[in-house]
Length: 312
Length: 314
Image (cartoon, each protein chain N blue to C red):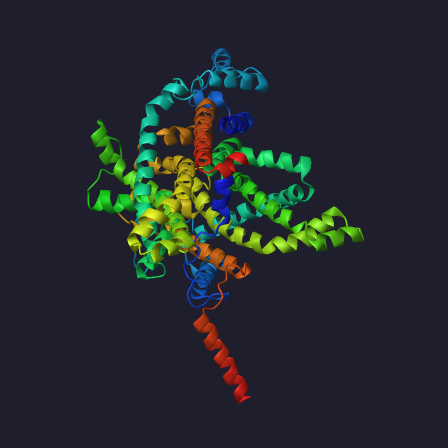
């Protein structure tokens, strides 16, 4: 087991390295002038320009710049933003809680809604309930996250005035209210996907021989469903769901945009638009690392459960 | 690592949503309906200049935020542009750029997959590692970074998403090639002395086309969604060009005045994506006989009886 974990961790290092090179190169090939975005387009004297370039190491060659960036990043320092005049670390620290809370809330919400839905539609396969749920999942998968967000905002915030339509709260409890609609919007997409996977897994398990045996022995149907089939069906669902968190991190960017939550997404998109290199590099690197770590964790947990993967 | 995402992408989105009487047939009811819708949407987009009396960019401030009426069937936006007209023209941009994304990923992904599956060894390892790096990103995040590099705009959004979609397709083609290359016809072609390129593209590829088609249809749906996201964030199509994603972005500021401004392009996206998903699912079931269920015993009995009766009549 330890060998497996070591192998997977070591595999991650070259990938992270390649990812960081890719991020760095992509952000730097922009034809735009970072100094102009720093000074908001005002004319600058040659000296200011030079001192700014020195401060951000823009006068050095690209490989040198990369080395400075990556060594600092490994020490946990992502550099200073051009636009906000503060370190990327503090920018992230200020905004990460909102994004993390949003993603976690929607993940929990998605699992709580999706798994029962999937089980119900598997048990009622091809009946009316299943048909209705299938059509709903069909629509929610096809609806882009921001559209769901806008629709929810229109109905629950603007028409019914049940929830605030944008911004974030001061206290934790207040924040929950502000984050409710955004997290529902973010989770609906995932609900559709997860309930579909739960459904097909459950159907497979319900048709298996052991389920038939259990039924033949006289165990009540609901017990066979909940105790025998559900346990077997739910493991792959959890793994797929945790992988989906990566997609949700990006989905959060869109939802934050609609509800003006002021999370990571805002500064990331702002950075892309105004070529604020350190911000884009820092946030992207962080998100990719989180994504890879989640993948790693899922693989390890899966290997703990299923010895076949460990030995492959 | 990409194991789960792979499973995720290559499975049809909605298996078994319409399995009842028409198993094994291509033209099931949902299939026909979705093809009709797709046809209608494509027709509207092609005929946009002919069927709409307005221009998509012509401003008419008198009609600013007009509600639906006979003059503007779905109303007009802030600067008085007819919404329905913009919906048609927006469909052109959206569908064309989605096709562009898929064309790019096919042009790059299919040869890469064939080469890495057919030759194996070093080529396979290199292509595999590159794919790993691309797959290490959540898909839209890589698109953000690429757009940051290429600059904003429709073209760079299309190229960025095209790159993001390549590894999925390459892996699919690779796995198909791995199965095909061990078959006798490949050995036969090789022993006749055909070149590797000929074997790959003329012999192996046609045998993979069915699966690739299914994946392409699905990718088209994903591309529409992802492009809309990019345009919505202002990274893709730039105003005043009409595009469903960009229209949603413009329309969301006027939710109280005329919600249709945001909802109409949204509904257009949903309808198109649902139709594409159903098509992909239908194609999948048609192409893969394992997915096609045999008729139940009762149905088989009935069919046999019918056949007997016919023969009896003749």
